[in-house]
Length: 274
Ligand SMILES: [Zn+2]
Image 1: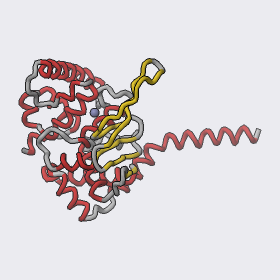
Image 2: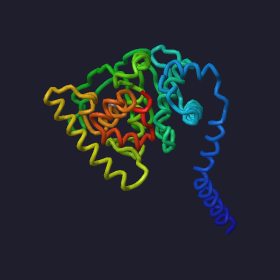
Image 3: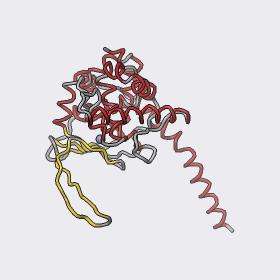
Image 4: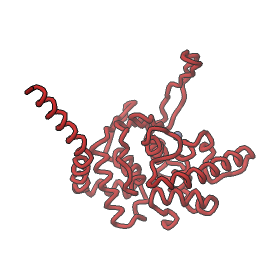
């Protein structure tokens, strides 16, 4: 009888803890967000993320809070002899935080580690036929988001990206957009949206724009959105995110419906920053 009561109590405690977990996580993160932001951290962000200047003060504060949480919760690993510095951590965390300014993200819940190589790294690509491995090739990569638990980045590529915020390329925005996309369990170009009705509008616009890009690339036309987005809908969302932040004006002009979907999702309007 006592054993049965103890077992029942243990079950109740576990249920209460599970029920309280989101609240406890929220309280812990609020405390981390409110931690002071060192001035040399801010100097790095101002130097490497010019977009920061365009954000209104409450958004700048929100970004600093998100950076604090990412630094506290994610592991940064230097690979290939690279030493992780404050500049590397802050640059990655701040750009990743731009995608969380809509206050809907859960800080990339599946992501545990961010692996950074000094330059382009070589990844093994395995070709399968059924269950059999038929070929293993080596492919040079600039960045990679493994939907489960890690992102792999090249610092050399990041340095190139932070020196050019108008070319539509940013490996950090790209790989973290993949993380947002995979948050609901499937990387299919559809992140978690606020309302059920948002999914219909998103699907209509993204499907049409994806097909349009494929057609224009097939015809050899110059496109605002990088042709890499034609690979699949997940890549299209990642590339569209890069374009939204870096080529906002041409995107708003030539792809207004797509721009508006992203503006609504990220709760930002980069056209106003120009
Ligand atoms: Zn990608």
